[in-house]
Length: 185
Image 1 (tube, one colour):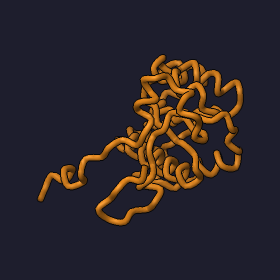
Image 2 (spheres, rainbow, N blue to C red):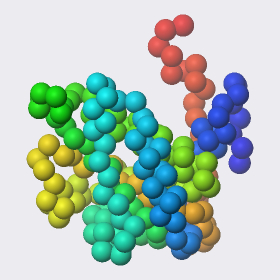
Image 3 (cartoon, one colour):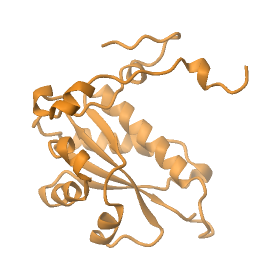
């Protein structure tokens, strides 16, 4: 389904959506690293670049990240060949104080990663339902590192691999007209 926009947009923006049906096809390391590099080009407050990545592209790390998924997300994300835990450094490097914009910056990194994934015909599906503490503890992350988001990455697979509940939802989500998001007219 081609989304209709009122104005011309980058195809990667217009066509991006969060699919759940994954193929078993492996994601090449160069493609995975390109997604990470794209994420690192996101803007960040004071150029802090607070994003950190735990890559679940090797069996041991992939297994740990799958174990952290809540059951409703495990149902479909377990088939993704790659999971990434996207983390944020909560303090600034120049004075060690709280970086109030770190999550915002990590969100920008996620957006850049997802657009590059779309450009490479990969799915990148953000996941909020998982055990952040389990990941933090397993990897013995420093106290100022927060696990923010998990991302399932892979190629589009057969919709029949999904439970019936998810088969019904396996399509681009509708967007409200952009004018409804503008608070001033």
